[in-house]
Amino acid sequence: MRDAAAWQLDVRAAGADPATRIIALGGRWCIDQNLPAAASLKEKLAGPVRRIGFDTRGLADWDSGLLTFVAGICKSCARQGIEIDDNGLPPGVQRLLALALAVPEQKVAGRENGPQGLFAQVGAATIEFWRGIPLMLDFLGQVVLSLLRLLTGRARFRRRDLWLEIEEVGPRALPIVSVISFLVGLILAYLGADQLRLVGAQLFIADLVAIGMVREVGALMTGIIIAGRTGAAFAAQLGTMQVNEEIDAYKTLGISAVDFLVLPRMLALMLMVPLLTLYSGVIGMLAGMLVSLTIFDIGVFEYYTETLRALELKHFAVGLSKGSVYGAMIAFAGCLRGMQCGRSAEAVGHAATSAVVTAILLITIAASIMTIVFYQLGI
Image 1: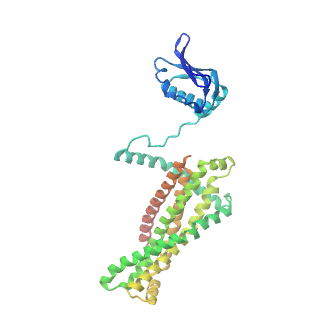
Image 2: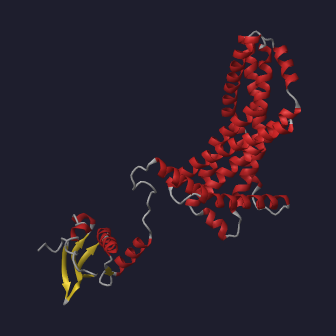
Image 3: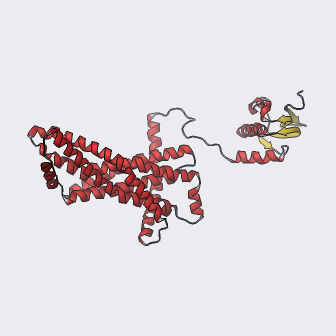
């Protein structure tokens, strides 16, 4: 027998009922007492046990150590189908135990399982894709209704938020867009010059860079950059709001989360991505001019004249229209994944990653479709 200051534990039968066990707890059940684990009672609770009760009349003091021990017993008995009678526990332990067992254990999907085969991964991805289509269409419908409310002046959002998003999406993205566009312009110039030099037509580097950057490459590179920079940020912001239950608070107050949170972000990207696309085209043409001047001895006036001759208004219209569509898709993907985010830190990271992948996939599909359509229309 232990001294009065130590913990005491005993398991005995409940009278003449062989299917019931009483766990008697006495002494100090505090975390500094080197308490036993709940698994130590596994053998004593084996057999035809169907019900467990507690006797804590000898309990002198307790803290979270007792709660942890009892919670472990409750979880173990729940797995074995054993009924728990907590009436013998102190009232404080009963209340804390009810709170602890009311919260389901969070499980990280896939971590408890081993590595999956190729076909299993493909099947899981296919099932997840088909399950996500109705949710995506539902969110698309909400966004369309929000845009209609905007046109009728009934959308509720702060104008200040729109200007803040425009500043974040536009001016603050200029450095990275400048660097990438300049390097892409250099690549296009060198790639075209290597082939055009074979026929002595280096001057047409200006045509290749100007049309390529303004119509296709500028919008595509800008869209990918903004998808990685801003689309992920949108998903992380809205995902964090989901974790903090802020979006639930908007719904409780009767405020449309799509109007208040999604609409400003979508408008900002639809307005700024076309302008960034135009800016990207200019930077790319300057990079092509630099290559022509330094490597192929083409004069500034010649390059400038050839660029003006090659560019037409329809090229700018195509580039700007693609930029606007790409911006809408980036905002849609980022906000969709953010609104679908779970309520954990890992879910926020997954939402940000998924937003970038979804946005790039949508941009690629849209680029292919629009290019074919413009070609068939002769634009």
